[in-house]
Image (cartoon, rainbow, N blue to C red; front, side, top):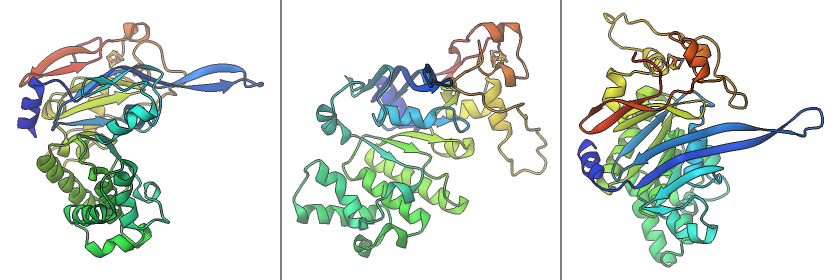
Length: 335
Ligand code: SF4
């Protein structure tokens, strides 16, 4: 993947997210008149290159899934831009967006909910081809069989229903549907979180194989850094709607700079009994994005917070690079 990334770096990014905001209005007060906003995604800047996997990590409620859904336009962003293949798709009409959708697909966390229980597996996988008006019935059926084979399912699955499959098999069905149109980018929204650990690695290996064969790019959302490390070229850490650290995957893992990233990494169990590194326990819960703390939103939980942290919002700044990939962190201090 690293070679693909280095190749991609020289080219224009496949996806550019510029100052993206997704603020949901919330009514408050006795008469529900006061309008405030849930700043689920707040000024996020990211890029993804062809063949690259960008991992997005954070606790639940940090805005990572909302970010993914805003990119694929399941939500209409309230600010900023989503640029795909050099074209601004942020406010594109559904009609103009439809042909572009062939190149951006999504895999969902819960295959049970994302697959229509009343449709056969054949119909589910064929659906995107039908929507895009590709081929005739015979050629689509042939493509469905091909896709089932690619994701490791038997051809007789076409006439069966999602409930007849295990969790891992259902996720394979979701993947077959997502790659049916030969997309360039797949938003993977916690695709292995609902699966047993043994099945997780099978699905991650399948995604890796598909990436190699199809030169796919992944926007890989997860709350588990260990999972993200397995698959990502670069990793972005999100906290309360903002990216607080981003860089090469190994660099984030070995030389992370933001106290929040340090806490997430310290919580990953290490299989080595001689390694006694202590996990950093953060105080309190993630604050509400409706009323985020002032300054650095992490300050109420940060063991290194100073006065300035309550007053001034730290900007993402470069603290190094690895192989030309910038390592950026939003913290007032060099920790
Ligand atoms: Fe902690 Fe301050 Fe850095 Fe925020 S800016 S992460 S509160 S030290």
